[in-house]
Structures are given as C-alpha cells and as structure tokens.
Image (cartoon, rainbow, N blue to C red; front, side):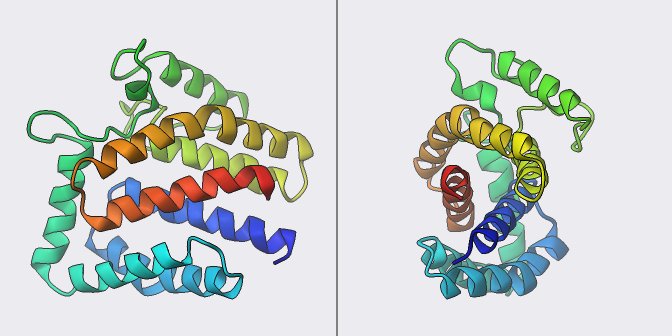
Length: 206
C-alpha cells in the first residue's frame, strides 16, 4: 500500500466518522450504506487493513437497520440516547471537555483552545451556532483539514495534524470509546467509534 493510498484511506475513514457522529437523517444513512461503506470496504480489503472486518460488520448491521422505517427510527432514537439526552444522563458525550475531570461539561478549556485552533487556520464552527467547538466531529474535521492540506503540500500542517491527533484527540477519544462500549450501544455507533479511533491512531505512521 503506497503512502498516498494510506493517506487517502485515512481521510475517507475520518469523513465516514464525521457523517455518523453528526447524526445522519434517513437519506444520509442510506448514502453511507449504499456508497460510502462499499467504497471504503473495497479500499481497506484491497490493502488488508485491520479495520476491514469492522466496516464489513457495520455494513451488515446497516443493511438490516435500513430495511424498515422502524430500523431507521431506532438509529435516530439511539443517537439521542447515547449522545444528547439519555435517561439518567448522557452515556457518551461527544465533547472533549466531558472527559477532563478538571473541566465543566461544556465550554471548558478544551472548547476554548479548540476555538483558537480553528481561528488560527481560518476555520469556523460548522455545526449549530451554540455548539461547543470541542465536539468530536469538529475536531475530526479540523484534523481532516490539517492532514489534507499537509499530506499533499504543506509539511508544517501535516506535523500539526499528527501532533493534534496524538496529544489532543487520542486520549479523550479512547475514554469516549470506552464510555460508549459500556452503554449497550447500537453496534453501528461503536463500530464507527472503532473506525474513528483506528484512523486517528494511524495518522502518526501514515
């Protein structure tokens, strides 16, 4: 597998993770399953990447879930339970601040630092205006930006991306993945967490 193939595949894995953790509607779920996953599966199987089995399982689960309106509804309900408003609390918040014991649940130091990083490279928060900038999808999109710019022309941004992945994202993403796993989640969300974690871990060696 060439270096370029590796990098393109990792970027596509990050794109998939952003789409799922942003909370897809029915049409987006269908697009993920009918186009996104088959393309990714072909790539990772071709190069025997360890994440291939996870993507295969995810596609199988989605095939079943998207076969009925009830299945699509269950994905939407589960997204809310896991990440927005679960009974008794949110099992796996999508914010970095929530995984630092010395920070408030939202808009802590992590959010402020993330806002500064975005401003430094000329980016703005793309979710709802009140969304804290340390949301997982925003951090993944920031990483995607640094890597896509850096791997194909700007070595300084590539180095920034690798450092951000290793020192900022990985520590809290591992805690997030563990919290999600302990919450009896719909398999698709845990599979996506595993895919995202694999991609971020692999940045340092790409």
